[in-house]
Image (cartoon, rainbow, N blue to C red; front, side):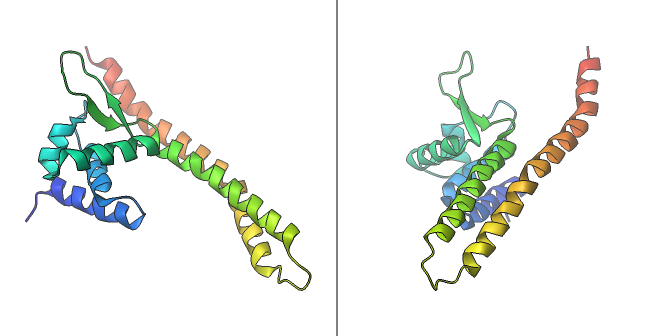
Length: 163
């Protein structure tokens, strides 16, 4: 049986694959979600995941382009490290707002282009659904940010008190 971290990494790979991301990219994401704060090098990831350097390179490039991870150099080390981008989940979700806008605009355009005798029902449903999400989405993000800041405040206070 795999240790809990490796089980999590494999599960992350499967979940992300179900969302349309390559499984190896999901596995790298799982590894970096459970990595030390300084992150991990491509070699460390390849060893941990028993994967090729080429596969790790493709996966890290994908996750970097998505905006979930970043490549950083550490003074005194030859190899760059990869780590999670702080605030990545909210930023990724904000990109979703632009997608909602685009789909809502597509519904508007579809209604304009609807030929005589065409059924407006599906486009009206699409338009209303995405309009509703456009209205709710910013408030959901604001509530999350407020909640997360409140969660961090006690931890930040403890860190500041340390000598």
